[in-house]
Each structure stands twice: as structure tokens, then as C-alpha cells.
Length: 191
Image (cartoon, rainbow, N blue to C red):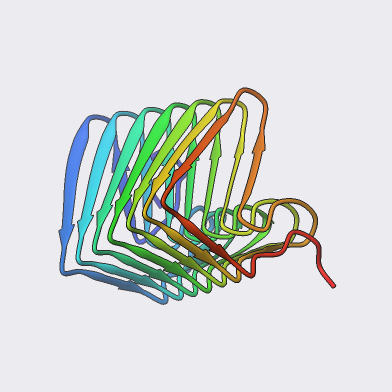
């Protein structure tokens, strides 16, 4: 547990830059995030790393207040959380995903792979979202209150949500842009 009360395998607080290169975060289980909790003005770069079978409030990574998460050739597999099966960003954050994979992640509430609240930006380039699930909204991704999502050359396949948005659930002041993306067998209503 960190001095802030956050719990994860790694807790990072206030004006820190962190690099994870060729790293594996596997089978971590904590209250806030299985692998990483970031708080205030943090940049975490994951290069050719894997987040597998982690679970918590957010399955793998929870970023809170002015954070940036950069994932390049990184895999998020079988992570489980309440908000964001793999990643949850809250209050003015940014997530850049390039040549990465989000597969078989699940959330009991919002965002099977990624969930954001309050002015979050997510940019996906050549990233795969496969078989992610949310019990309520946003099988692959969801956002509440000010989300900007930009997708180029991405594949969204077999993602599902119990209620709304097999791929994306976006509410209040948001934008969604997709360029040269494929959407294959996603579903927004459970059967």
C-alpha cells in the first residue's frame, strides 16, 4: 500500500517518469489496480511489455489526475476490473496505444479494456481490441464526461457490452474518430 492509500504492485506518485521495457506484470491482485497505480503528473511508458491476469478496481493500470500512459507493442490479456478491465484513467489523462493488443479483458461496470472519466484522450494506432467485455457499457472502451478517442488502422472484433456499445460507450462532451478501422462481430446487447 502506498502512503496515499492506493494499492497495486507498483505505486507511482507525483511528477515521475517510469519506463517498463520487456516487462511482464502477471497475476497481481490489489484493491486499486493489479499492476500499476499512477497519481498526479506521471508518465508511464510500456514498451514490448505484457499485463496478464491482473485484477483490481482497474485490472492492470489505474491513472489518476494528469497522467499519460504510452503503450507500444504491449499486450493486455485477461485482466479484470470494475472500471477498465485493463486501464482506467480518471481526471485529465491521456493514453497512447500503438501496435498493441487488448484481448479478453473484462469490467464488471464500464470499459472492457479501457475506461476514462473527465477529459481523457485515447489515441489508438494499429491496435487490436479482441473479445473484451463490459457488464454494462463499452465492450472495448467507455468514457464519461469529456472523452476524445482517435483510432487509426485498428481492429475491433468480438467485443461486447451487456447494455450499450459493443465497442464504445461515450457520454457527455465526447468525440470519436475512426480512420481505416475494422469493426467485426461486436455486440451491444447481451443475449
